[in-house]
Image 1 (cartoon, helix red, strand yellow):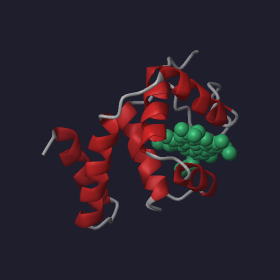
Image 2 (image 1 turned 45 degrees about the horizontal axis):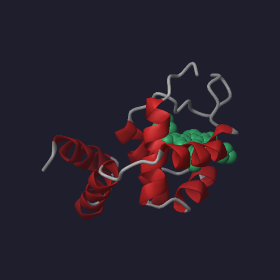
Image 3 (image 1 turned 45 degrees about the vertical axis):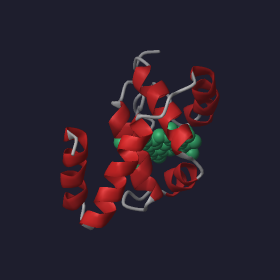
Length: 115
Ligand code: HEC
């Protein structure tokens, strides 16, 4: 088992998830990390996020630019499976497939917070 998956398993169990759910999440994380990313597609998708996620702090919406790719992926998967609760992000995350999640996570993680 990879280090990232082991770490995810621990945090998922901490959040009260069953080990089966945590294990599935770990598998999806590894799968999504391996998906090749098309930069143009990523940029196009990211336009839909920027209305809420802007660089400026203090709007109540977290800044995701420059966030670690794994963390973005895990957050989106947690909104999808209902472990992390937020109505807006649940409906957004639920509409994303592996390729979309990989593209968005790569795009935002590569962006500097000040851009
Ligand atoms: C309607 C406004 C809105 C839109 C559009 C939106 N988000 Fe969010 N997002 C939020 C809010 C509000 C939160 C904080 C929710 C919470 O407290 O869990 C959040 C949280 C997140 C987080 C978790 C950040 C963390 O601190 O762990 C990620 C990752 C994320 N959004 C990614 C995206 C992506 C990718 C898109 C585009 C596909 C997107 N969001 C579109 C409002 C939005």
